[in-house]
Image (cartoon, rainbow, N blue to C red; front, side):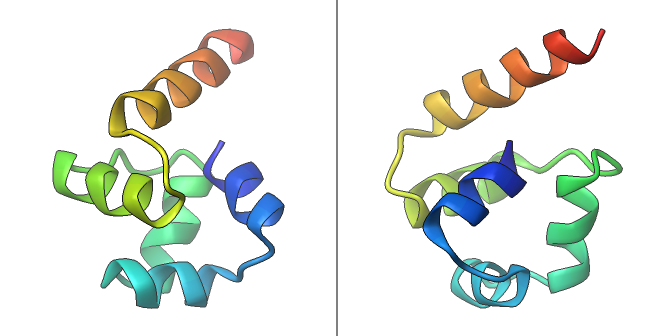
Length: 68
């Protein structure tokens, strides 16, 4: 979901990381499902994409359920 949001906005992992004050490698790991973000990171990413944190969580949850 994060990858899709990032691609829709046309931003690189580095640009997202810089704007959210986190490492680019962390963005990569989030996109690949290797890490789960803290609530602070969820808020930062949601703010960057101008969506509510609950909406971001819902999108991720929906995607996770589709994978099962």
